[in-house]
Length: 171
View 1 (cartoon, helix red, strand yellow):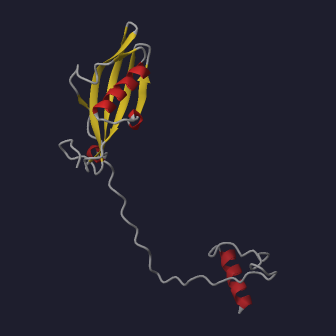
View 2 (view 1 turned 90 degrees about the vertical axis):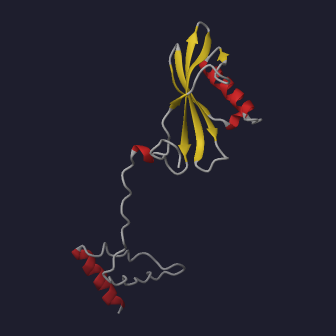
């Protein structure tokens, strides 16, 4: 019986139907005897159902609402600083104080772009009290006027938990 299995495996390997022949030098754990070759499971013809591919994303499926411009001047956007990075951190600190958040570090910031006289920074506010909005992002347009950096524009958008409705609001 053992020799029949070896012949079957070797024949399948030669025909390209069963992969390569097993390595006869492989020993069963704890012995010097070659490990037994188990027969392959019979093909019943049943195939696993392949799930359909998801539809291609559309703009409203992205989970991010469009940017909306905010009116200036208003607090906290009326801050100034000696550098774009310092201004972004100062705005973050004012927002944290308004939220009564003792650790301003929970509000991530990043600089998207910066040149000698202008920059774009982003401030992210996690939202915990709304089951449809994950976080609110503020995109700050910064400009250097003389030796002082100011906020010259602010836009807001939301990152949604379940997607965006046709009206541009989180679901």
